[in-house]
Amino acid sequence: MTIRVLLADDQALLRGTFRMLVDSAPDLEVVGEAGTGREAVALARSLRADLVLMDIRMPDLDGLAATRLITADEDLAGVKVLVLTTFESDEYVAEALRAGASGFLGKGIDPEELLDAIRVVAAGDALLSPAATKALIGRFLAQPAPQDRAALPGLDVLTAREQEVVTLVAAGLSNDDIAERLFVTPLTAKTHVNRAMAKLGARDRAQVVVIAYESGLVRPGSA
Image 1 (cartoon, rainbow, N blue to C red):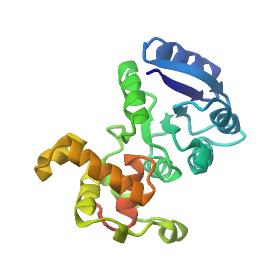
Image 2: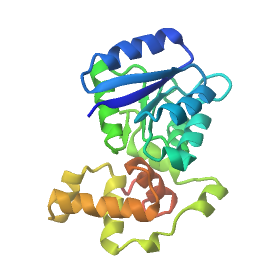
Image 3: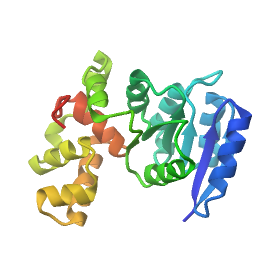
Image 4: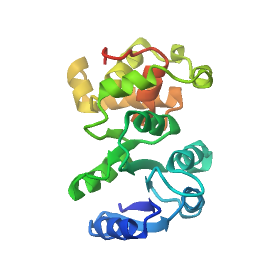
């Protein structure tokens, strides 16, 4: 199955470079380009791409605001956002995840790593660059704004095993790693993860990480 990609960057030259790179992969296809955040939201709604490769700093509407609009739209529930930026700061990483992004990478990433990142995020897994360490994410996500805290889903909807699985997802473990840790099959681990995501209303594993930290289930340094 071909992964449909929407490029959102205010620099036409960079969009052209990304288009050539993405289209060079047999399983990836660029279906549209946006030069502003507002265009990105409009094209996400009209083209229904599988993934938006989103720059943060864009005119009219920045990438973080555009990401919030896309991830808040129930009609776009299947659209993933991968933030790609030269501004790989702590605050941007945390804000991108809070906005609903499924991944965050610096523009210095190698071409093959970018293609792999698109595949990983499109498949529903969370992806962060090496600079975005778990400790960094934990430090910022553990201090949400008051309105974020009030909107968090209750963890009492999860079974004890599902809460355990969520803590392992927050630690960056894959389904195979979780299966090995809990002495279950990878399919069972995947089932637990999917059930926890459904109960928490999480779009993907990145949002599970956000909820795990902001709810207090996982604290900085413990995952």
